[in-house]
Image (cartoon, rainbow, N blue to C red; front, side, top):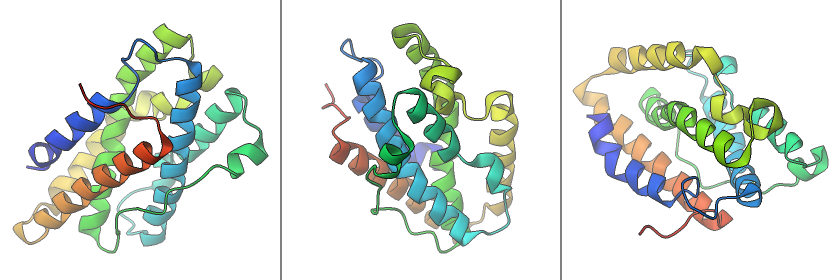
Length: 189
């Protein structure tokens, strides 16, 4: 149900990302990673503040990889600290909201596997030169995704499912608005 409920939003956002465009270049990639950093930094803080104990959140953090990538892409620590951060985030005040939000965040790690190859082919960027975020879990990607899906399935209940879906849809919307404000999305064709 969650996948079908968020599918249209996912496809619409994916179509607006610059990775597959002919004009995708290093400058665009750097701006995109800056925007991802500004979103993930504050969203991870919100997830950690709820701290439901469902997950070992330290193994799911993406901000350290984004920081490393931005440094490799030429930003200083001061420049990274000065980057704008997203304040328009989904509410996380229940396990249902946490799971819906994390569904989007964790699902993006799977998509990162595809994007990692595109960035390597088009820009010659790998994990050491600015692309660690796109393979943030490395060999643990499958294991962490399956563990997340297991938790999600354990929580499956008609009383909560709509909240999970709503949180996932809200997370997609917040992310798209943030990327739009950052100027890294293109109009869908």
